[in-house]
Image (cartoon, rainbow, N blue to C red; front, side):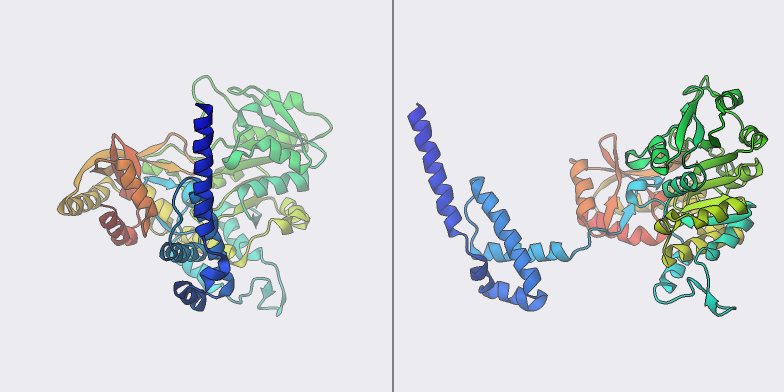
Length: 467
């Protein structure tokens, strides 16, 4: 029996070797007329890379027992490899999930004015040039004045993201000293990064007080030492504690800190400038409220509830911001001209009191159920006309993006029934344009709350191809 198995193994090995020897060399492939056409179109270097990748994959396939492909198949695969090499990995998608601030899909979509402002600064601009004085200026003045007007802060600074803002604040103002924080606020943010780890990187020392569910002002006061520099409050924007819970009001923390000559800082995270309560959601603490409570500094994200490009924003006392701006880490975390232009355009929507109509995040949050139902019926009718089984049902959208955890908005969903809803979803993922939807109750579910009206023709095109 063993001899028979060994003979079979040897035979299979010989067969594989025979097929491997049939594979052409790189030079031979480059002389093939089909590959020569690719050489003329794409150049020598890229074509050689594609040929090498093709031959590598073909060898692996032969070792798995597949026959050696012929030259026509190899040329076709080389052409596909070239297309893959030249295709950007980052591409636009239609978000039909109903999750408004979808971290995996790039968080907040940007307004037309924001996109226009970013496009207009792609060439030269007065990023660090003071036009009136005709001399060098600072890039940070471009958004600072508007941020101060909107929030009531004395000064502001924009860096690359909120985690960077926290790291910069701690590095500049608390390095080598203690920072007191409630155990209930030792959060983990996206990508596995945790507040204690950020604090360690800054050189500040963590001092935990209270318990996971209940922390009082007296806990902070008892923990004060001559080494204490700051009381840090971190808003739990991506989870919620309910039940037997307590945390001090921000004004209590601010009063305690100032009583002992310390700093009070709020990592607010989501960055709401509007009251979410007016749209049927729980109230999300706003930047203005944190500053009004007496906090020295407040930091938050630009691409969550603010609805702008990715950025970390610090607002607060002028003297503290001046010290932060002088810290070497500020340059490492600085943002580009494009981000500053986009952020400024987004903030102008708030200054003009038009954010609910112009900032896509707020347009989606404020979208009325009647309008969503009408759009859903139009899409469902089109799908039925195309031969699909589709219905409009009640459902819920999520704010997402580490904001208002557990909060939902009523919506109308288009359910598309298919023998293989997972296969339909995959075809939508691989289509052009790409559509990301949900699967619920063995059906593909589309929520138009997060589909921009201008994207609806593309959505119909993608559905038609997938069906």
